[in-house]
Image (cartoon, each protein chain N blue to C red):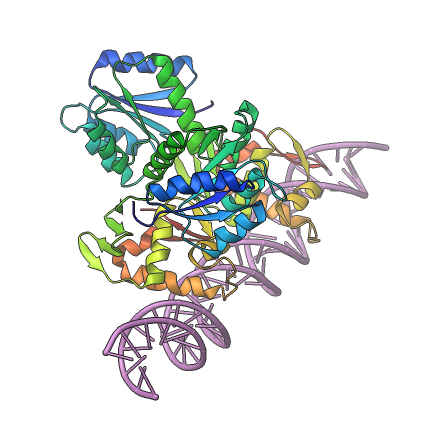
Length: 222
Length: 222
DNA sequence: TCGTTCTGTGAATACTCCGTGAGAAACCGT
DNA sequence: ACGGTTTCTCACGGAGTATTCACAGAACGA
């Protein structure tokens, strides 16, 4: 696969190495973190993490806490590594938005199979998303509306992309800033508005898909 | 478990009945469609379908086409029923956004287990609270009464949300202020009344669900 | 019944938030 | 370095909302 980056979080170096070796063999890129805090830092530093593999038991900040924090701002798929598969933990995890569980010890084959399945399911390596006549091809960085290509800047593209990944969901400005802009970006609130304006105008009639929710933010709804 | 509606699409009446019987036993509501076109109609007629079970082989419009069409506008989970599990089909399906495959013949137990798993995973039974014809979807920031959407301001939305989370509980003005407004808000007591008034009027007949408790506060009771 | 207390209501006011355009700043390829 | 493009900032006007207030009328208790 091309350019899929996986964040591997585990306090045991041996375990990290094991997982990373297999990831490398499969052609994925990876980033390591040895505790929860580092994981959060790494995740928000880089904006291109496509999948997180997370150990539950860790010093400083355990896997649940990391998961919760990440979920505040991102829908990135998360695989949890647990020492044992306890039913209770699984329920907690589902609430927090964990996508998959693997209990140690596991065979790397299983891990890789799950990774593939999740990426396929969440469409990280999908070619194009199509919604109500709007086709957005992340890989080609191309957008067409009803067949005719639309010229978007990078920010506009990312904004539209974020909207389309979250259709029907009310998105606060804060959330949009944290996802489309850098995590630590503290700019003017009007910035988003300006980009939304340009997007809307470039989208023609379909610009109405981007709805304003007064006092709240925006929502994309085809 | 409450008020989950499943759309069952299959051209064989026998198969539909089999699936629906089990759905009913599990307490799910269901809608049937016997071909692709009907499926699309049913799906967009009602806006409350939480899950689609879709046969691949059908006259007029096959399962793939239905899936593609639905995916243009909705992220609803889709389970595909296939005659055989062919690798190629699975790949196509994943691209189209199919959430799960089950190949015929299958045991109803398996089907039910998958349904539960998917609903849990996609969290369709979270977030949206439904009471007496009023559906409030916090994620989409959307309220519908008997199917028709109602336009609420943010404050009204939060107030209704608070009421619905505390149905049957007598709520003092102080409590409402502390929960819906900032806890350091020291405004006029009439403020709440005004908002309740607007809420009631926007809710039509269902406005009566918000009952006044004289000398005390309000209570929401569908 | 009557007075008191509390609530419903409509209008007026104060306020917050959004859309917009112009321009500054950063970025990029040449 | 230069010109064009993209991104960001800012201030303003208008739209939409929250809050206040005064008053009428309902509920309650004596």
